[in-house]
Image (cartoon, rainbow, N blue to C red):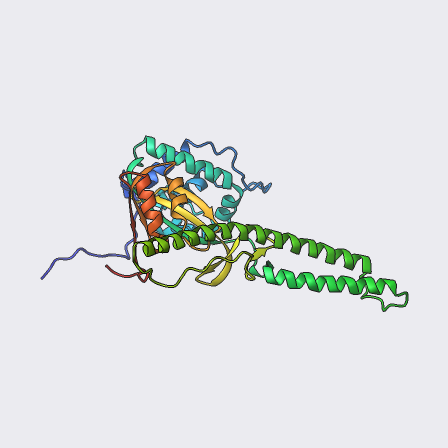
Length: 365
């Protein structure tokens, strides 16, 4: 009969005198704590409540956020708060205190500049301390959709803007006609014809500006699509000249005008409609490159593209400002053969490994 270790969950257990005894010496949390201590946090915005309650030190809150992001806890401040109870390394970092999620969320929003500054300084210190290798590293790159601070219901399409402009023009003509009639039926109480005209003119100006923005975006897209179309045509002509028959349908030239479905959002014009797991939303496409050994983020950028197909060149350029990757890992969404071959040719020794299919999350290998 086997002998097993006794599992006793009922006897009270004393914590060690020093929580360092529970965290290995080479653990990432030690480096984060030491790095944050060397960063000036005197510019941090704190909640001046005018009461005698003690507040959490900015350095501790900053270290908690940086460590959480380095270890993949991005989803919510509530998860970070929970980790101060359940994660031994986080308990050590916070010295057994537990900042609530409201405090963490407010600190992050008010100190975005400090977080960006800390990000750059920590990467530099990691490289100098050899915690992060600068050359011959493996970097994983991926993107995620981040909701914009705008409602998709505040957006207008190119065709919709045209219809609303025509409708507003008709309303303005009706109001002007009423103004010429001395015995016209008065408007609702609190409304006047001049105010209604002004409101409609302002709306028309906003719609015209939105249409102009969509036309500018369309020109940029048409330029890229035209170059791609010409490249496809040239390849097919080269095949014909060599006596080979091109496969597939003939490529269609791109449209020369904006699509009727092109959109602009009034509250956040820089955001774009993107497909998400919850349907189409106003979003940004946040891109990140992570060193697979240290788990430090070595490159970040934000894109307006609804997918990752053309994002790899720009992502790699940002990553190479901090490290020199030997291997880059990307998923199927980045798998553009043309981009991969071009990037590998530009950087001798670089190998880009791209998944060529999609597997269900949680699949056991």
